[in-house]
Image 1 (cartoon, rainbow, N blue to C red):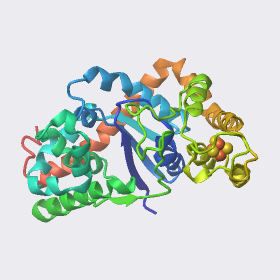
Image 2: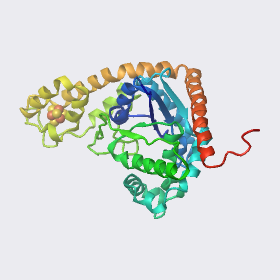
Image 3: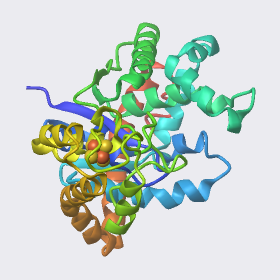
Length: 335
Ligand code: SF4
């Protein structure tokens, strides 16, 4: 039976939060047993919209890696690598850029949404690098011959764009690349503590996997609840309360009861929040213990990334050999 090749990754622009955990990390932990998994720390892609802040990108490489290890991704099963250390990805990006029109990139719904969100950075005119990141992503995927790509629904257009590039490449030069398939899994999008659809540092509405109990307490105590509830015995509406929303993630067995008590005015908001804090901490404790282990061992973390990057380089070199051969770029190969 053919071994599945799975590729996923993160941009090192900040520590990972529970949105990442429920949205993708949990899935990855399950998937690591299903095939050969590569996890890219996408520092080059992070620079497309952080080109003016390279310290931020560099500083977050080890944070993102430690978060991945903390949730239970096993370096003996997963190949972690740094995108910038694989020059083949950059080479493939250049080759593929001939196969994509600017109009097609501008029509990509994921790119369109992101450009709109980044108006402040780009103004009216987006950079060539940012517009072209789906091409670089196609290079990431195909460099490792990955066929299973775990993504959220909002990223499906990126996978479709990659499939188009692969088809075009194969039809012009020869069948050497494989079309990837998106794996949607149980990807959930988690709202921020303020009810915002997006969770992030700039919005101040996220709980990070490495947050201390003190930080989590502060954040949960400020979470948005039913504003109509003044006294403990006022009947509440858990459907508009972010504490109830988070109980649904962290207090699954008890959430029905919590909502019933809230509706009947039998539950105080402070006690409800304290219970949530306790359950979040219980959930995050084993993750934080593992993170602590790696924080104490920076050499081991560095070695995991170094070894993984070396392995990834060898995989990308195999693809590059085939690509250059069909593109008639295999000069001096007997030397
Ligand atoms: Fe929200 Fe709990 Fe207060 Fe109900 S009792 S409004 S669920 S915090």
